[in-house]
Amino acid sequence: MVAPPDNDVLWARSLHYSHNGSPALDEVSLGVREGEILAVNGPRGSGKTTLLRCLSGQLVPRGGEVWFNSTPLHTMSAVLRERLRRDRFGWIGPEPSLVPELSAWENAALPLLMRGASHRAAKTAAMEWLERLDIGPYARKRPFALLQSQRQRVAVARALVTEPAVLFADEPTAPLHRTDRAQVLRTLTTAARSHHITVVLATLDTEVATLADRVITLVDGRRVTAARPSEAEGRAACSLSV
Ligand SMILES: Nc1ncnc2c1ncn2[C@@H]1O[C@H](COP(=O)(O)OP(=O)(O)OP(=O)(O)O)[C@@H](O)[C@H]1O
Image 1: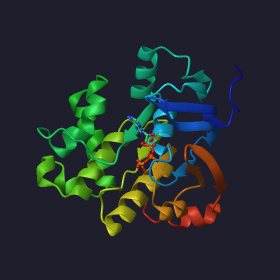
Image 2 (image 1 turned 120 degrees about the vertical axis):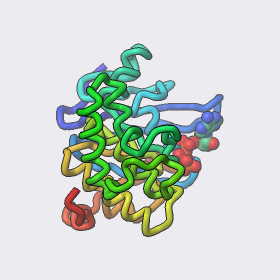
Image 3 (image 1 turned 60 degrees about the horizontal axis):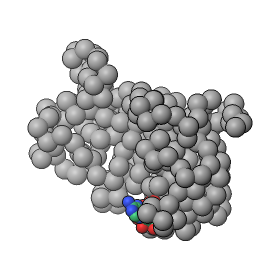
Image 4 (image 1 turned 60 degrees about the vertical axis):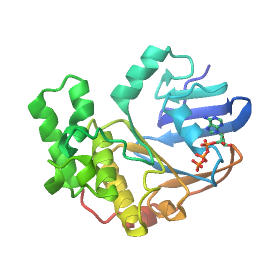
């Protein structure tokens, strides 16, 4: 077992994964640099979600290696993997999946409260993130009283409130309208850049390439191409000062 290159925060080699015998990832290798925003593109069923779940330690690959800095996830016990995920990773899925009984700020504060942060500290941090994401005025509302795009912003705040080392975003804008999609993505990527959070973003949306530092494409569970938009192009799209 060889540790990954120093400047890669995440590194995977020859990943294989099958769901009930049906192959989802085949020989996928990649490195993600610290602070990078990497988009994983590809058609439906190409393995994007499976890749993010392997990289984030939710799934253990059937073959290959996954490293987070100098820590091998593929050989780690389930308990340690769970702790690593809780302490160092953030996750945003296609649906906000907020706790309906809690207000927006309570939902955003939840990861800090679960880590044992004081009520006041968790609330302050959650409110700051809701403000940055332009939903401060809705902090006391419950999810049912919010628009889908506002709920998804709360989910983004919840994922960023711990300032994770790596944020995994699995089609985070899938249920949104086109204008909301662009705004949520810009907010997410700008916030991640300003806090030096590495992002791995699975998406069907080709516009995302303009917000990412690099795009990789999966087809039928295999990595097929890599393109790198110029840094200027990627960063010019992030005009918000989050
Ligand atoms: N829980 C599961 N059980 C069985 N097969 C699965 C499961 N999850 C995914 N698959 C299959 O694995 C392959 C890769 O799926 P995956 O969800 O990783 O792709 P994806 O690119 O994220 O797709 P989408 O864009 O539709 O979310 C597909 O053929 C899918 O049908």
